[in-house]
Image 1 (cartoon, rainbow, N blue to C red):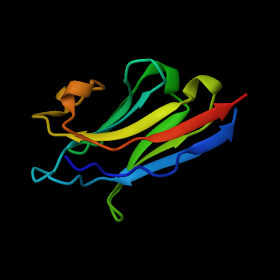
Image 2 (cartoon, helix red, strand yellow):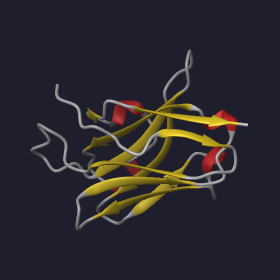
Image 3 (cartoon, rainbow, N blue to C red):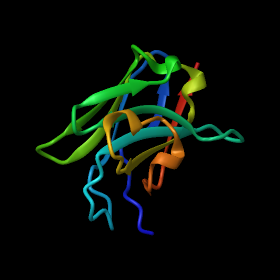
Amino acid sequence: QEHVAESGGGSVQAGGSLTLSCPASFPGDIYDSNCLGWFRQPTGEERQGLAILFTGDDRTDYVDSVKGRFTISRDKVNNTLNLHMTNLRSEDTAVYYCAAGRVGRSAHCQRKPERFLYWGQGTQVTVSS
């Protein structure tokens, strides 16, 4: 399966900001995914769902640890999925992935990896204190 490439990762000091982006159209995504999300995986840990966006009603949802600091959005003109991250902490250090899937209704778009069929290749974010 071909993966899309996220961009915007890198190293930043605690308190800083980064914006991650990936194409909102994934190779092989002929069904026009309506559930878009961002995940991260720290070294040696499981993949964690951070934020989702359901395109049908623009509903968003965030894990508690990033609420108020991270914002998921879709740029319809450039067809990209973005994650704007502020007030970054050392515990935000991880590989970050964008993902897409198709669900029947808004409530089914959840921060669970099994809801997503298409994944980005991952980009490293390192936050130093």
